[in-house]
Image 1 (cartoon, rainbow, N blue to C red):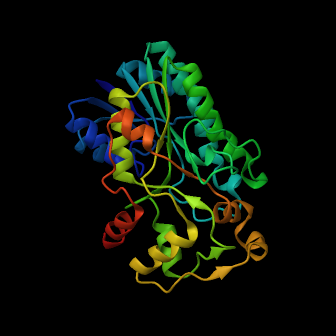
Image 2: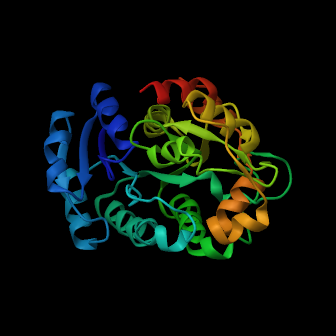
Length: 308
């Protein structure tokens, strides 16, 4: 198939593009940086330099490629170090998830591309009810105020792509880890700058970036329209996974901090994720996509990541 991959040099794209090429797909891969063109070409893709917020340029690039599938992986998170002010940290990504999504949908309509596979997130789920969510569970009606715009942008992709594309697919990824994905978190754990907040009862679902890429490729090739949780098989509370990450990283155990103290220091969003987050089930993706993560648990995945 002819596949148009945006955000192709990101943490996931750097695995996805070579995988698609190896499977025999014709890949057009976009980047905002001319300095990354050579790497995309070496990976076997046809590189295009384009700003996802430039509507005319996006449409022109898609018209030239005539793809059968568009993959929306555009973010601007490479230098993000703090989640204290989420809406500020995610401002550029919010634009890519709203205006950028609209640009890709307009390009798809112009060219007749039926299938769009877009990056979502499991942050979309309500922080009520059971600890592990399926794709049928309700979305969060009341996100944290400091993250309201970021959560609205995630929800925009989640709602707009399935509604507007003829074959719209949203992949609700868990928290990425792996080379190039979560180095600030690992650095913070090693410096004991990532405490367990409250009881550490928030449940997280992780996904290693290469595993996320194989799931994305499976969705490109054979997913029915709709939403899929792309996570490993081991959702776990912060109080379980954070000490383990510190241990395999050779760090001292994480400190503990009450929620009231963490709020002014780390922000309400971080406190909510540490104490009230919900994990996700990957049963639908494993069954419908025929996909199995190489690292079914963050336990073996964290060990491989830290080992480098």
